[in-house]
Image (tube, rainbow, N blue to C red; front, top):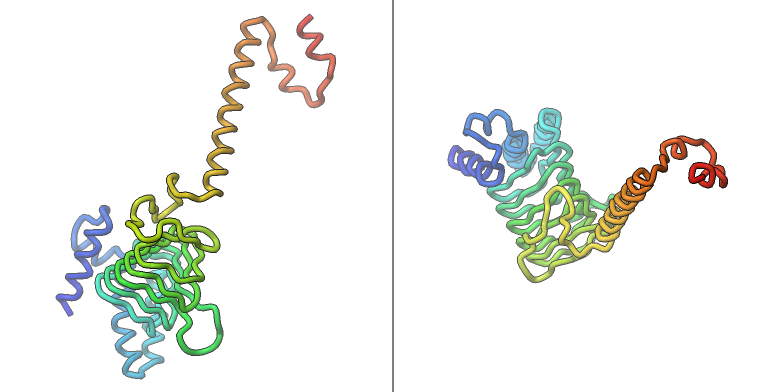
Amino acid sequence: MFTWIKEEVSVVFKRDPAARNVWEVLTCYPGLHALLGHRCAHRLWRMRMKWVARFISYLGRWLTGIEIHPGASIGRRFFIDHGMGVVIGETAEIGDDCTLYHGVTLGGTSWSGGKRHPTLADSVVVGAGAKILGPVIIGAGARIGSNAVVVKDVPPGATAIGIPARIIEPGRDAQAGFSAYAVGSDMNDPMVKAIHELIDHSVNTDRRIDQILEQLKRAGIHCEAAAQRDTFDPNYLNKIVD
């Protein structure tokens, strides 16, 4: 038991540079608290003490803001960063060395019984706000970008972003370009590129307007009054030029 706790604490130091000492991790990290509670609840669930297991899970949700169904299977060295709003469903399966950021949902898409939640292989990282829905399989080492909605399998080592999620870096190290909090600028996402182009165009337009106003000011033409007019008079510019 103590060996397992020591292992989970060491994971926090590896994946969160804000962690300063063991006491801080043990007392101030809700992800660790939620995981400790889940380990106990999951054992009780397997012993068919299901109400007690659900009640422990409920207390963990109330204390940490992280909801993990006691039926979910979670591997070793699992880390939840920040944690608020994380939801992990009953039939979810999580491998070793996985990381989830806040707002992540491993949810189901069916009211029927059986396997209805995602399976995460080893070393998967899921960015903030991402939703993985249904009995999909996320391959080992895959990365799910922030706010992505995944409804299909993701191959090992790939990165998935967008709504619905699409694969952008299959078959190679997906850490390049991956961001746990937002879409990176180097990702091949047409929506992101379009937004960046609009922002660049707006900045360039503002710069040109400033240059025009500066040239008018040097020519003795003051445009502040024109900018403050509620209605545009076609003859106004002629008046100020004359």
